[in-house]
Amino acid sequence: MSELNPFLIAQRQLDECARILDLDDSVREILRVPMREMHVSIPVRMDNGKTRVFQGFRVQYNDARGPTKGGIRFHPDETVDTVRALAAWMTWKAAVVDIPLGGGKGGVICNPKQMSDGELERLSRGYIQAISRMVGPENDVPAPDVYTTPQIMAWMMDEYSKIMQKNQFGMITGKPLELGGSAGRGDATARGGCYTIREAADHVGLDLKGATVAIQGYGNAGYFAGILVSSLFGCKVVAVSDSRGGIFIEDGLNCEAVFEHKAMTGSVVDFPDTMPISNEDLLELDVDILIPAALENVITDENASNIKAKIICELANGPTTPEADDILYKNDVHVIPDFLANAGGVTVSYFEMVQNFYMYYWEEELIHERLDKKMTRAYHATLHAFMKYKINMRQAAYVVAVERVVEAMRLRGRL
Ligand code: NAD
Image (cartoon, rainbow, N blue to C red; front, side, top):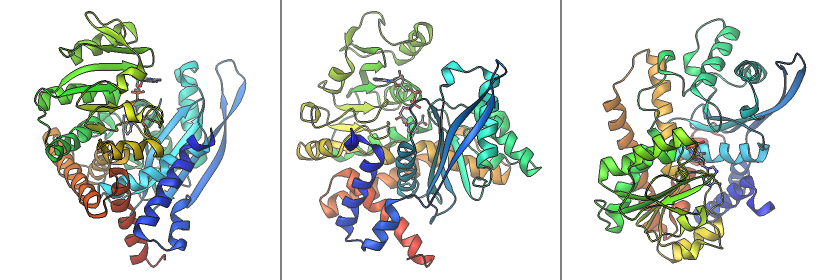
């Protein structure tokens, strides 16, 4: 459906923000489209001796505030519009948490689940060769995203270092710790989201001790969110799910044990002493906090009015459609929007870049402390715009981010 095209949604969200800020049309035109994109064909020798050609993209959306930054997806359904939307959201994300970076994103159409390690390594190196003129520590810094791993980041860093004939650790983040990765990157997205939940709970007057939580998606973001809301705040995680279905128990789950069950069986489904629940029903549970941490467009005009949570913390990118946003706002559901809620990942990626430049590495406690400061400030800047303009939290986060990007463009003489 064209209205669920993520890039059209990203443009609609920006148009709305331009209207609220009364932005000049020429400024809006600049911000509606990526400043640069590259489409590449990557020939890869497969294990059977034949060569296959993969299509890849790298999009640099806006670099007014600094080098562009954003992950690389390896996915069979990748489209350039998804990459464009994610690059736009990276721009707003870096601006809302006030780190000195712009937004970018990359993707390759491939199915890593059907490729050997050797094929994946040759594809990763081929992709970096193809886009090498665009990337670099001072230009554009990729990172992992869907189906790309620290190992893939290590191959990409090595390939780029060979091209440049010197070690270039700062050209990519999400690397293994042994190769200049940062402490605290593993749970950074969920941890950053939790800091915003803490502030949001204070705003809506919710006591987090014993507060109930449902989490859709139990991968990197969802699992760590479960662990952290329990350990940091004493929340009760009553439901979690993955692509095969969900589980529910009123007394609360042991998130670590559910993770071990998923590691053994491939799914959270059938975890002992729980009731099965569908992904759709999980969203409508009577809980205090809902954390979508899987896919786009799961909260729509069809189910938004059934949502009972007081706070939604969007760790997933794009889980809520614009129509659903309107309904949630009317119903007083406090939404912490995706590019604010999940900005912890890029914030610690930025810390990784800083450590690579310094060649000096920080302790995990220091990372947590600095991440907390960034996320707390970003949440309150957004809350301030939410109250000032009487708009929803997503529009408020846009207002904060777009104002910062526009100011950087103005100061650089680009407007
Ligand atoms: P992941 O692959 O580790 O986990 C995704 C989870 O979603 C898995 O448990 C999977 O089974 C589940 N899932 C897939 N299809 C589903 C469906 N139809 N219904 C319910 N669950 C389903 O991915 P992740 O890194 O945790 O990312 C999840 C979301 O968070 C994505 O939208 C991603 O863009 C966003 N995000 C992640 C990070 C990060 O640092 N990991 C940063 C920013 C944003």
